[in-house]
Image (cartoon, rainbow, N blue to C red; front, side, top):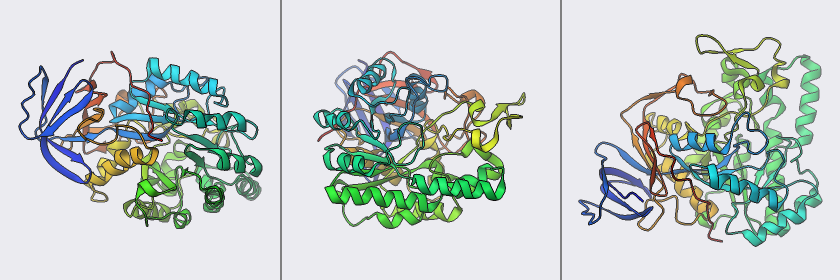
Length: 461
């Protein structure tokens, strides 16, 4: 295995940015310090003027394999992730078939082992009638990131709305429970009312159908179950100001039993953007009114929200109701079926770190805080072994970024299999130049080395 010495680079880690050398040996961080003399054969990289970050860890992605590979695969999306500085991912169970058995879960790990360019873990799926299979995850707690519960029907077949089932899962699970929280009854009532009032629905109606109350009531229910059973609960993609009253910053993250995630699209877009982006930003939970975004940013900075992720959820342009014009722009397809036919979800994993570096440039957040929320805190929250920090002895999952080199998203540099992004045309102030996964430089200045695959994440439980 090739060893590396990165010279004179600004190492961003655990709240500090310090110029140092970093020696990578046998896939791990061997030494951090000034003027390292390696004593072994190395490839030397000049890091002067650049920054070294721990690889981002995305705790919520949908890579669509098996069964939906016309829109994404573990290989294509993990490659996009690596290009964007994401070195580890945790993938969701709403595939075809859904991951309702331990065997189906292990089948996905086999795909990951043979094709994923980033490190990987997969959530166990839940339904109203697979409780025995779900609780078998307890026997594999060091090998599985968690159990996923859809408390709102974001995808068919995975809705868990039986309170007896929820009580058994929260009462019996010894692993982290991750929830998608939207109240199905509220959603259905809103949909029926608004459709009756308007007749034809449009993208701007989405946050009115999947509204703040629907999110709040479902998150409250999940927290009540978690407190009843002292469960380890992680609520995904918080999107409303109202929900923030449910979370605390009064104890350190490693002592929290209830944690929360915010996604980059809820930090970036608001309901004002439906006017130009329409169904391209239709997702569940919905992107909502601007005051919610303002509140999410404040809660992220004061640690009521613990981690940043993407909920990367690619669909084809056709499934979103669009097509690409001759000039490369996206336009609505005639007779596309409109809002109600458009699939919910958007692709983000290639550009999430770059988007947060944009907000660093804007002065909204520090670079050290971005690293905390996208790397350190995810590793702490999920108790991931040997990753998420730049520490001697840790796996060398590392990203070099050039904060002085702008990068613009074009159709030609999008790596998602679906071939589009809601951020097309956006220029970031920075570029990911190199990505190391387990000490292997998978991506370096536009050149790929796919000779090594990512590793299965392990958890210290």
